[in-house]
Length: 370
Ligand code: ACO
Image (cartoon, rainbow, N blue to C red; front, side, top):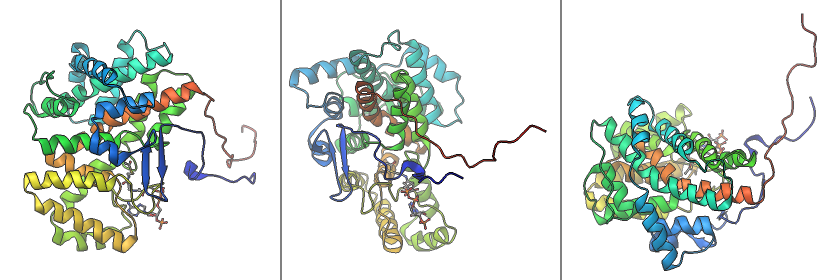
């Protein structure tokens, strides 16, 4: 076999520059376009953060007002798309529905093949506005509920929750939702973003790249972990059961979902901000039992393995308390990360090189057919 170094999983390999976000595991910090993510989560709407990611600068008041109006106009679930979603089974995974919806939106868009920066920004905004209706409606139809029409007087986060549940959410709940959207939006060359960039690098269209990214996000080692955290909580039940459950899980070499990260080894920079929003919400719902379980599992696992929680750990219980069904958690991640994915697709297009690594062959030597 050829002697070549293999970078399994591309771990530690820089493959390109990006000006969109900076992850610094040494200082445990994450910057979007130079701004600390915790500051963005404290002060900005998700709409403002989306514009920052796409454009590189904070929007002016006029730019924001224009985008907000555009987003509100693009919120309603398209009738054709609704009809296609209705044909899909209600016992399949909601990520399959979101992936299909993006394909349909792409197939419907006459601009799909127009791979210019202006056209791709317009597509990014279109997906941003359309995805909440898809995610909310899919959950409702699984519950046997009718579609809820969007409301123009509500912002992105308020309206998302309105379309999902048909009632106005409390400020603590809206705030935790907004914080989760801001924190999930972007994280450099993670697996789904890299997938999107690989697809964009072939000069394929933005919708194809986003569809591929959704497939990559679905897995439990990536976005699927927020859903898996809730399965773990359901299995454990209460804080008293953490120790015996963990003894058993570790004896069976189980991975504990919502812990560990390829880049952060001393804690995920986003966790304290998400956890604080989750705690405000837990106080609102008066669910100290969930906080006890959350804290006990985190403390016990960190003590035993030195592996810290990642963003999915506080996001899972946050979405659960809001009333989302567990399989809907990763589609919520999609609604947020679509901003980062599309920013990266546009960045890839602006300075493209086909992404095509090498492999080292370790199969049989050349041989003759029998
Ligand atoms: N539970 C138990 N053990 C773990 C965990 C975990 N969550 N995470 C890492 N480890 C252990 C591994 O078993 C491995 O141990 P070993 O060296 O004895 O074999 C060691 O730590 C290194 O783990 P790897 O999986 O090789 O490290 P990698 O950098 O590839 O892992 C990953 C990162 C995939 C996220 C991993 O920590 C994991 O599987 N976590 C659970 C899934 C999860 O929460 N994913 C969400 C990621 S963040 C996000 O998408 C927002």
